[in-house]
Image 1 (cartoon, helix red, strand yellow):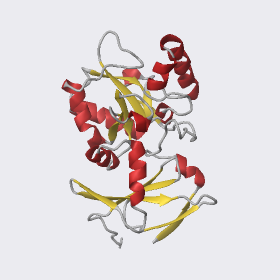
Image 2 (cartoon, rainbow, N blue to C red; image 1 turned 30 degrees about the horizontal axis):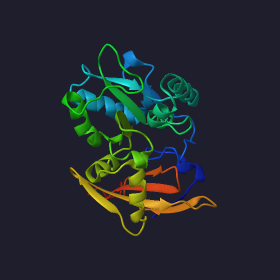
Image 3 (cartoon, rainbow, N blue to C red; image 1 turned 180 degrees about the vertical axis):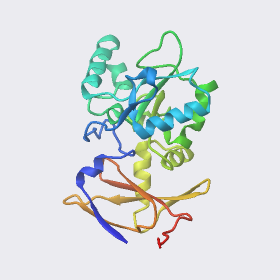
Image 4 (tube, rainbow, N blue to C red; image 1 turned 30 degrees about the vertical axis):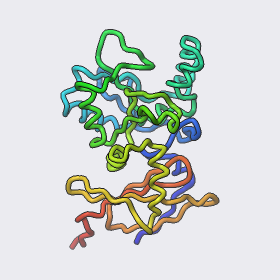
Amino acid sequence: MTRFFLSKDYIHTGSLILVNGEYGFVGKAAEELVPIQEQLSSIKIQRRAAVLLSNLIDNIHGWKSIIPVSGWRSFKEQQDIWDNTRKESGLEFTRKYVAVPGHSEHQTGLAIDLGMKQDNIDFICPEFPYSGICQTFRNKAAEYGFIERYPAGKEHITGIGHEPWHFRYVGVPHAEIMSKNQLTLEEYIFFIKEFPYGQKTYGVLLGEQEMHVSYLKADPSSNTELEIDGCIPYSISGNNTDGFIMTEWKQRNRCKTEL
């Protein structure tokens, strides 16, 4: 077993951080931002999310019809969007479709707004229907680690109106679990707490990979001590609220002693 410590700041990092009206983005400016396409150099998201998004659109031959509309935003840009939308469309509309500055997923570099490629694209509410190539994208999204972040019927949970165009990278297998169980990120953060690390896990089989997910509560007063089997590939993400989400690949990969 390998023992190490997770700092309190680590709670605010990773692909599963929850950013909404209650929990603001308190991490550092998103790192490793890259363009999704060279010809759209101004629209950037975190590198891994950008690679997988590009692969997804490539694989469904979607570039002729789908266009990225908005990716990473700074606090200032989010503030400008809030102020301008409020001025043009009123406070009620703004609260429904624009996150309060400091509480926007776009500041994480993990969110992307997509639209149908057409002459006039609405920046706030781009068209991304539940049909054709857009629905093909939606059906494949979880395989590449993306979820539709603000689905219809969950507005009371997310605090944001239904946004068919807004997708969030959370990674695999989490996107698959959320999609299968029709969970928003808010619900998933709560759900996974039923599987405390070291006691039980939520297992899922994706192809040949057996993956196990669990929750580790952060020590509120100090760094959090963790012991993990160094022979098992794993990843850790903060949840931006009170702890960490552990993902372990416990399938057939075991340690091999090098001679």
